[in-house]
Length: 375
Image (cartoon, rainbow, N blue to C red; front, top):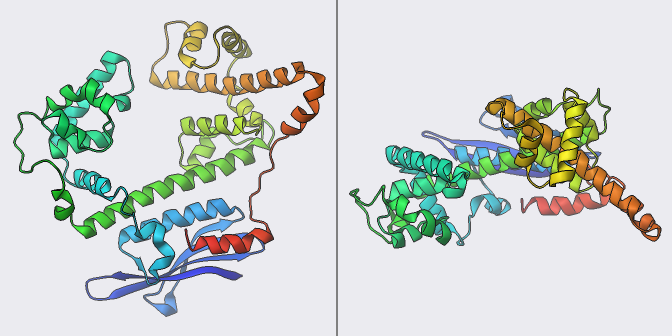
């Protein structure tokens, strides 16, 4: 087993300095990453973070777990190998501090009132709430209490079109409130504790890398399931439980994989086995008649206006999206058949399902080891 990467980590406690090691090892294409506490050398035990053949998955899990340790307060002895984690860079730092300060000092009652206003506005305009204002924007407003449109413009992530459309409604909740601070908000950088900001930064990185690790794992599980038969294919519920992603997100990933040439019909057939064939045919016909860009018109055409509640409606939308994956692939194959014979050779070659490379080749290992220091 070759040690590819090793670094010592330390944490300052009340009466002592704790120590640990983060490491990555490799043998014959098998990757192992993990963590070893060094407080008691004799009883030091290895905590395995990842063991397997998939380089990208190992790296994603490693980043997530390392970010979690940094959020706990561990710091590397050799800092240059952790630039991605330890330096946010000057670009965007002011914005990050505003967001951090707002999350640490949100007026929860005002936030709830703003969220209620957003829900009402979304219902009135038949729009998704996040298109009116994100949760982050509402926290910024409920913390800094802008009372004019110009002050609202100083808050990051709130665009001019949003201000023109909803700005008056937003500041209506803050215009009469007393505040102990002023605009502009350059005072935030002086008032925000650096240790609190650093801990907040690592927490955000932990969530980001956790999400990345879940997506990489889900991608592998989907491709593995696609190679089985209908009876052998893992269900989306199983993949969801193992990866941590919701079924809706998995279907979005399936749509993307299909566009890139992967055939996921084994999973689709497994998920649609309880959907009557007559309904599947009706959905296909609706796609031919109405196009496959929007699902709601197809839903109403096939099932009418009397639709089930939220959980039942979610199932119907899932089925529509799965049928649409098949419909689009079959439509593309039909187009290829109908093209001039002179182009068939090229089309046949491009239609071959891409090979899934799950581990670095020996020639690439040394380059990836060099790049690891930058991870």
